[in-house]
Length: 57
Image (tube, rainbow, N blue to C red; front, top):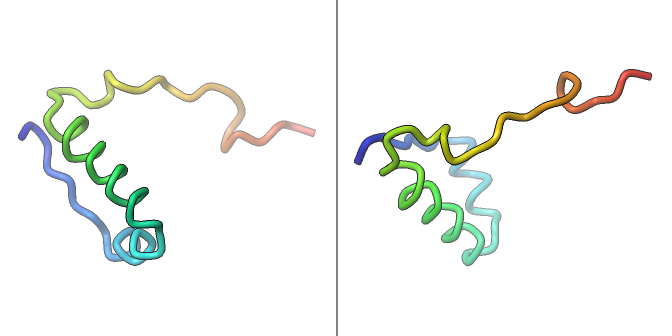
């Protein structure tokens, strides 16, 4: 594994509230796609726009 994923207590608590199938898919993605990738940032696209996604009014 190129990366180690550590789950914060708050994430663990929220994950328990998710549907088991959804929780499994998220975990698989993190552990099977991101953790083994040399640079996981290459898999995503940088966000663009205003700060926090809010429009200036």
